Image (cartoon, rainbow, N blue to C red; front, side, top):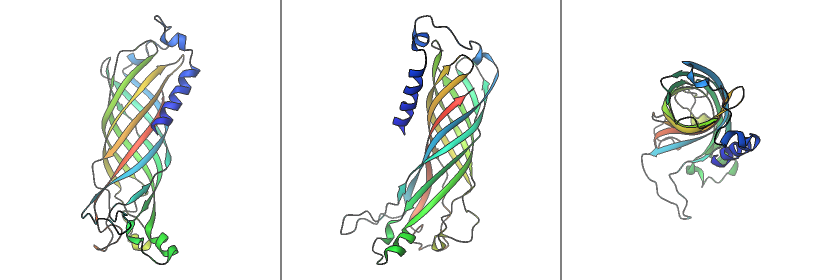
Amino acid sequence: MMRLFFLFLGMFLLALPLEAQFNEKPILNIENKDKKFLNYGYYLGLNQYDFKFDYKNNLGRDAQGNNLTDILVDKSFGFTVGLIGEMRINEFLDLRFEPGLAYNLRTLGFPGFRNEPDPVLAKRNALREVKSTYINFPLLLKVSTRRFGNFKPFLVGGASTSLNLGSNETSLDDNSSGTFRMKKWVYNYELGFGVDFYLEYFKFTPSIRGVFAISDELVPDNSTDSPWTGNIDALRTRGLFINFTFE
């Protein structure tokens, strides 16, 4: 994901008139852009979600050396889209509200079915697809440097809450029926960095951000001895976002 971010950033920089951007006295684009009290924009991007598991017991390893505890996560890329509302505090600080929608698919592999003699049954029991559509509500503080010509680096961080539309929290079915359940509401903190580029007519911003859930998202199976959730003490989302912002 980091390589992809820097590839996109490098391609964008090569497309810019670099001499105008980095010489001693560049021509300043949209010079008064950041002086407005309120700014608006939108963003598009990619995301990759993961899970962090806390286990009740460490089950050790089998005779072949396989870990009997760890649940495997097959990650994939998803897409993100959203809006931006920014309130200027001073030259270096901005308060931002960035509601958006993020879609992603994760596949979980549970280790307790390795010795199942029927391979079709083993695959059906061991794998669970977790399709998530999150509506995110981040409130962030953006801390910027001084503007250097037509670019300005920044750090961003804050808190967010997310509504998981694919949580299955209220479903009566659990993993014994093929349904992996999670809580609808998730609480997170976010940290990231990026660079504002001031183009002739608008501001373009590539950024990368980590999203870390602080609340347990797991809805356990109905049976406390469930081979899927019985050994999970807590489950929390971790996400990596690459956003491209237009203001």
